[in-house]
Image 1 (cartoon, rainbow, N blue to C red):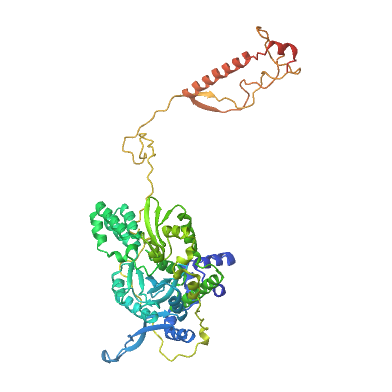
Image 2 (cartoon, rainbow, N blue to C red):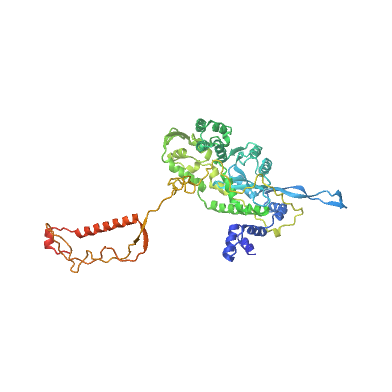
Length: 601
């Protein structure tokens, strides 16, 4: 009851928050197993959730017309009965066939309309593991809006990630959004180099497929094991000029011929910006926007299927409305992120030297290199403008030289108008389960519990390819107390033990530690100072009373002192005597006129 009220007010609370709440409010400490069990009882049973999937899908279509929701099942034998006659079994009854959940696909009409009208013809594909007792994989397609933020398009719950499931997912996705964008531009898809995924993407006609360069880098470093190759690889991937790409590849060939051969077997159109489709206007080389989506839904991946899908819908609805409010308030022509990038480019363009050779043709000298720019064609020989969709330093310098507005030379994909179109539609909410209409269909059985291949993990993950392993530094300053050598200790010393004979000791009285009493040089009652007149050896002034330095009176104990201690004591006595004698002979000489005319102090 205590946790139930807490979950009603905060459904996204995790196990750590539950533990802290119980400890702070009630002084109770509960382990994770009991918290997980209590959380499952509050959130609902996974078996019951799978059984209501068809009913939930029908509610999505009823509340969001035009949406695509598919729940696929298969008939399985769930029980077998036999009739026994004595000790022998007679004819057995045929097994009872029941529908079992297999996979589902969800794409809301509001999300689909926003993607088609306001986003670029680009999306990434990836899958993440679910953490429920029945496991499974969540496949997702994630695009980019005009402000370069991730935009979830569709997702599906499947039993495993392989070629068959990806084909099924992409078939339903293309049926929902079409095989091409509204402007007729073919889709551009970003993913890793998983074999089943590559085959599934190839089934879509005229599609351009990009590979995540991070995965390519990991595989390359894993096979050839040198960090210098990473710098060459990223330079080749990020360049937008084809001739420069070939020059870098030749450098890789001279550095490591095997790595060059391995990299040449991957078509450059999949991983280098110099060969990307210029109509897409996306400069991404990695699939990080899909990874961001997977992290964004981390808290709902352990929930039952209906709660999982409801959590995704609520998060997506909140995100879309928040971005709609931000886009409506934004009054600039370009979106915030693109405007920030263009502003930085304008600052860099101040250091470029521009020579105008024709109406819209220029020569730009920047960082000891020359570039050709034609503004009427949107062309720069470096290739940055063509791929990114907004002018780079060389084109920006030319635009400034003719006093034009750089915003007019940016692609429409980055305008605030397109940004607002993306979030014009809405995902309509679903009513409470108690208000759902009756649904005449059999309940679905949950999928079978699948054991993951391989040995279960007991330790933390291994380092990915190319990731350096951090080792605890070994100290080289350890000194052995036995042999006095550096690099080991006496416990691992191989030298014979060295026995040190102690020096002879003599019982002596320990010096007392206290405040001494004596007569020293100090200030007298008549305030006279000991002085010496020039060319005389007589002293004037009275001897003052003060705190002296002779040995004081104190309380000390008896201990056995070594010869070294006795020698040290004799040295201290001699030094003390010399200092006392030096103080008594110290005098101050003053000029004669000063001595005769002014009183001494």
